[in-house]
Image (cartoon, rainbow, N blue to C red; front, side, top):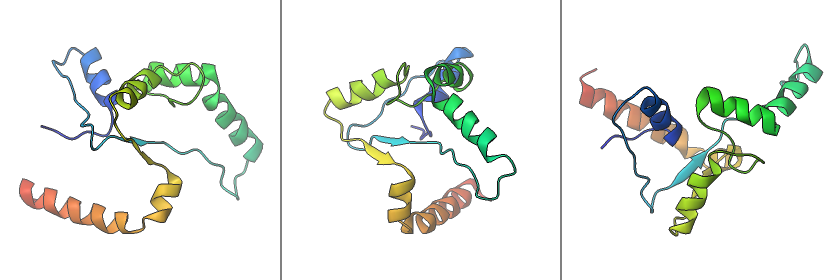
Length: 125
């Protein structure tokens, strides 16, 4: 058993010929998001906004999927939405890990540090 950060990693390795499969436990399904934003001091905020709009468009999501084998499941044309629908159909409660969730759970930073220490100790580092 190995934990990973998303089924897109498995799709990527399978595309290279790796003999892999994965299972998402019904009682611990999560979905995480990559975040896009424009810094207040951005030299070209309008260009950044155009980029975000492009990435969030149906064509942008298609291109992201071609490169990364993941996209946003709630956007039109999503290729990963089927996997999420399958999990929901099995009755999985899916924990949404987004900026709001992270901001409401500041203890996650400490837990992450503790897990890193445990894993490094187990590896002998």
